[in-house]
Image 1 (tube, rainbow, N blue to C red):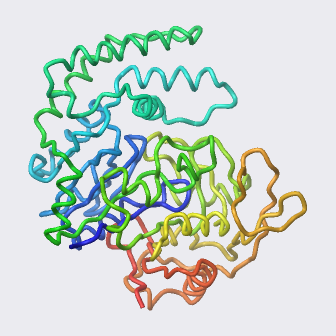
Image 2: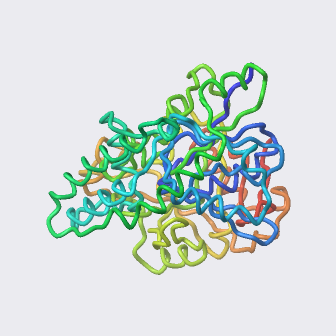
Length: 425
C-alpha cells in the first residue's frame, strides 16, 4: 500500500509550490489539493508560457496524471469556470483528468460580499483578505450551513441556496453603508454550477484510499503557507484553513499513518502579502530590490508583496509543525546580485534572545538578530547542475541545512520548470 507524500509552503505562502508540483508530477499518478480556495495563485512556467492556477491542482498539464480537488477545498464556480476556459487552448482531457470531491464546499456570491463588507468595516485593522469569500465560506462550513458540490445534484439545491442567501442578506444588513446587488452576480454563479455538473465528481476519500491500496503514487498539494495556518499561523492574520501536513488528513480523508514524505518549500528570503507581523521585513532599498528582482506581486491579487530576509526561527517552526523530511529552496536567483545576504537566527523580545516563534508575534516588538553571509554575486539562472553552482550559493545552502537540520534537495534558480537544480546527495 502506498503513502501520500505532501508538498506545502513553510512561510507565508507564495513560496513557489506550483512550480515544484509541476516538476515532481511525472513521479506521481495523482496530484490532490487538500485545502484553501481560489485565494491561492500557483504559477507554472514552461515552453515560454506562464500559467496561474487558483483551484485546479498543478499537475493538470502533465499527461497521464489525475488531479483531485479534495473535500478541504472551497470552490468558487465562477473562478473555476474561468480556469477551465483558460485551459481550453491546451486541449487537455479535463473530464478524465480532473476529479472534484462531492464534499468540497461552494463559495456563493454572498460569501464574497460578506468578505468585502467585513474588511471594509475593519478599516485600519483589516486582515488583508483577498476578498474571494474564503473566510465566510469556511465559517458556514463550521457553522454547518454550507453548501457542498454534492448538493448541486439534489432536487432541492435551489431551495438550499436561497435559504443560505437570505441568511447572508440579513448579515449584510448589519454593515452600514455597504451597497450590493446579489442578482447581478448570480447569472455567472449558476453558469459555473452548470459547468461543475458536467465535470467528474467523486467521493474523494474512497477514491484516494482505494488508489493507495492499488499502490498508486499520490502527492498532496498545499496552498498558502504554514504561517497562515488557522491554528498555528500569525493569528488573526491567517487564512481560514489548516495549511499544514495535518490538513492533508482532514482535507483528503487520509489517515495520519498514511503520510509519506513531507516536502517543505521556502524562498531564499521571505515575503508576505496582506497585513500581519513580519519580523524581518525590509522597508528600505534592499527590500525594494528583492521585490523587483523576484517579481514579488501577488499571483491572485497583483498586490506588491512585503519582502525581507530569511527568518530561521519561523522556518524551524514550520519544519517542526509539518514534520518536513526534505526542503526545496526557491528563488535562489533573486539573491544573485547581492554582495552580502542576511539571515535572521534569533529574535530579541523584551531584552531576551530566543530562537523560536512565541505565542503572539502580532502585538509585540521583535528585534531580529542577523548573521551576515557572503553573497555569490553571479547570475545563476543558466545553471543546469547544482555541482556547477558558485561556492557562495553552495555555502548558503549548507549553512541553512546545518541550522534547519533537514536536507535541501532542490534549489530553484528561475521560474521555468527547467531552472530546477537537484541537490539530492
